[in-house]
Amino acid sequence: MPLKELGGALLPDDLAVACRRQQERCQIEWLARPSESSWPLSVALRGPSDRQAADAPGAVRAWLSAWNDFDRASRDAGRRASVVWRSLKWRTMGNVTVPERVLFDDAQSVADCAGMHRHWDTLNFRWQRLIEQHPIAAGQRDCASAVVKAAQWSDADFWRLMELLAWCEHNQGSGLYLRQLPLVDIDTKWIEGRRGVVEPLVRILLAKEGDIHQVMGLKRAPATVRMRLLDAGLRAQMLGMEDLQMPVGQWNHAFVHPPKRLLIVENLASGLALPDIDGAAVAMALGNNVTVLHDIGWVHTADVLYWGDVDTWGLHILSRARGVFPHLKSVLMTEAVVESHRHLLTDEPTQDARPAEHLTKDEAQLLSDLQTGRWGERRRLEQERIYWPSVCDDIHRQWPKRAIALS
Image (cartoon, rainbow, N blue to C red; front, top):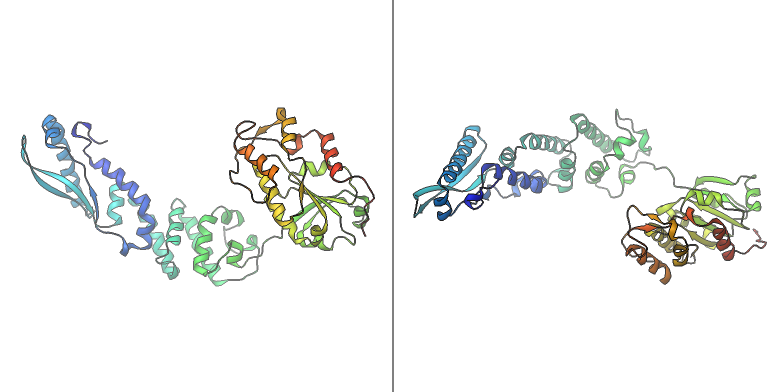
C-alpha cells in the first residue's frame, strides 16, 4: 500500500500491482505487435515532498531502502527493469537521491515485476507455436486475443487446438458434421465450449467469414419446426398424425392442401393444450428462431397469429415474426390481459431493454411499460398462466368456427 505518511509514496509492491494492470491491458498488443510497442516502458513513481520527508524520516529511510533493494534484485536477476534515480536538495535533509521512475525493457520484465512471469511465458510460448504453424496469424490482434483467452487452458487443450487448426487448414469444405471430425479428444462439446477462441482463429487462418460451420465447411443440422395439426382434414392428409417435427423445407411438401391458419406459440405446453381449430396448425417453441417459418411457402398466404409470453423477450419475438410476416396479428398480448392477471405475474430473470421495430403502437407501449416497471421491476406474464377459457375465447374471436376449405 502507498505510504500515507509520505503523501502516498509508492513502494515496489505498488509497482507490481500497476504492472499487473498494465499487462492485462496491453498483453494482446505485446504479443501481436511487439516491435510497435513503446519500449522501454516508463512508469513514474510518486514520492514524498521535502516537508513530508522531514515529518517522517524513518519512513523515508524505509522507502529508499525498499527501492534500492528492488533495483539491486532487478540487476542480479537480469530482469531488464531498472530504477531511474534523481538527485534532490531538500532543506531539512540536504542532498538526497530518490527513485523517479522505473524503466522496463520489454514485456517479460513487466511480467516479472507483476509476478506473472509464468503466465507470460505460457502466452509467449503458445503464440510462437501458433505463428510458426500458421504464419498468417503474425501481427493479427484477433489471433493474439484468442491466445490470451486460452491462457488458462491446459497444455493438452492447447495442443488439441493446434491439431484442430491444422486439420481445418488441410480439410477445407469437408462437408462433415461437427460431431464427425476425426480428431482425438475433440468433440462437439469441446469445440462449442471454446468457440470464442476457435472461431476467430479459424476465420483468420482460412481467410473466410461466417460462423464456425461456414468457415470450416461443415454441415449443420437442419432447422426443424414442430407443429400440431388442429384440424381433422389436415391430420387425414398425414395419415392421422397430429404432432410432427421435421426440417423446415419438408413442411413445403407435407400437405396437398396446406393449413389456411397458423398460430405461432412461444412455449410448447401452450401449443399442446390447444383444442381443434378449423383449418389451423400451431407451430410451437421456436423462440427467436421463429423466422425460419419464412421458408415455408404456404405460411405466407395463411392467416397467421402470434401468442407469446407477455414479457420483453416475448414482444421482441413477436417483432421478429412480424418482420417476416407483416400481416401477422398478436393475440393475448395486451395491457388488459396483464391487468386481469396481475396476481399471476412472475419475475423475468433478464430483460431485453431495446425498442422493437415491428410492433403496433399498443404493443410498443406494452413493451415500454414492462421495461419501465409499470407492474413492478422485471415482471412478466407467462402465457401458460393465462386463464384457459379466456385463451380459447380470444382465439375463437380471431378465428370464428366455420367450415374452412383446405383445397
